[in-house]
Length: 172
Image (cartoon, rainbow, N blue to C red; front, side):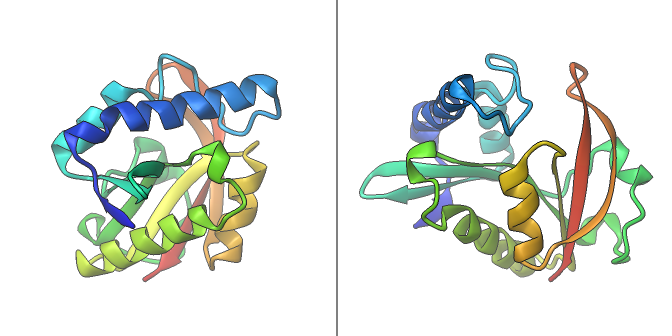
């Protein structure tokens, strides 16, 4: 089940983030995130307070988390999007994370489908997202789900991570 997150979920969300960092410590690295800097329980709390944080849960255990909102980073203006949409018509997937123990079970597809349906019910016409150019699983997943690579550009994410991100879009 995927549902809106609650404050009681924050420790479990933090465990998902830490499990991803632990897995990446062993290699390979797919996120280009910084432990203790992003993502954190505090960044999850901000999304929770905004009402845009969702979790995947089974038998009381969290298996995934995502922030779904309409916030497009300033760098999105550099991308040649092919699906025209007003800002209020765009849903944006941020920090879609699956616990490494759940990897390979279709959880990311499930979470992406949930985001698409939720964005549709919110009246969005298009969904967009970005992922680090080195994130091979995500760069394979999104095109397989019908997302189009709209372009890549350098981001200075959160003011401390300089990276090239691939930006994807899909008409809803």
